[in-house]
Picture 1 (cartoon, rainbow, N blue to C red):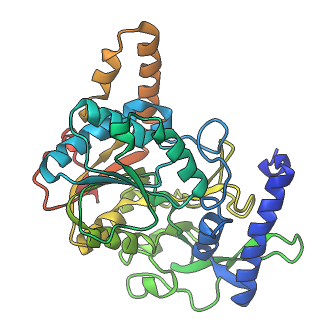
Picture 2 (picture 1 turned 180 degrees about the vertical axis):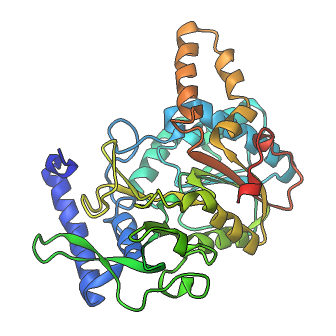
Length: 395
């Protein structure tokens, strides 16, 4: 059964409002818009997009569950990495897209137990609904913790010292889609379907471009070193032109400290493979995953796997050091997740924590699909999370 068959009247009405916004943009553009523009509208249109409107997104009643909501074990490990950095830099923690506030809660409680609280815990959140949930959750913390939390509408203007956290943020940056035709890349877009009244995928006009001499001309953000001739005819893929500017803003703000990003993705050499001919676009709706971004518009999450080589390249361009890159499993193991499980004295709780750890660590769950990358500036602190595994040579 298609997910759209189960929409409530309110959901249908909201979806129509988002579609009206998309249709207006398509009409204004003369018949089609690039996929990245469509994705930006579907996710971030003010008051309408998936992350800007009020629909519940996380947890059993939402569309997906992230690692911090799955288990406090994840946040405890992240907190220990933050502790090492803050001991050198002082300053604050800034979390992007804090979900339900689960990671913030666990990190603050863990750092309090370590007597290593940051001066402030800042949250940059674009969703009014999620901000309200975070505020309710974190207000229940002890006053010494709750009083350190503040919400931002934009990056702080003053030079920032400390740790920036981005858990499952990069995958939701608006991406471009492309298709390979005769060894060159053509940009994909979204147009109106005159028959159904919905949306359809189209190849945008203009000359097909690609290859080492012209990759960037037609598809913004397409890697210049991508060997399109090695990809099969009709291959579809994604690239993220928003990634480099986003990291550049972090580099302009971070005076001293660490950007820690955790997300699903691969180095470029493993991401654009001939057998991955339909790309990595993934949508989440009520805990169902599918690849049709043109249905349930405004009601579902839309993501694409992260090109971690592009992350590293953008970091270097922004004056940041790539200080670590590993699988999520190696990162959590290095930071003591197994010790946390063993420390549970109650047998039933220990068994529950062990189950949570398996989901976070196993290769067929989150352990290898998700990666952790550390981008640093003027940082001499140890990064224990990357002591077990160093995959930077793959970037």
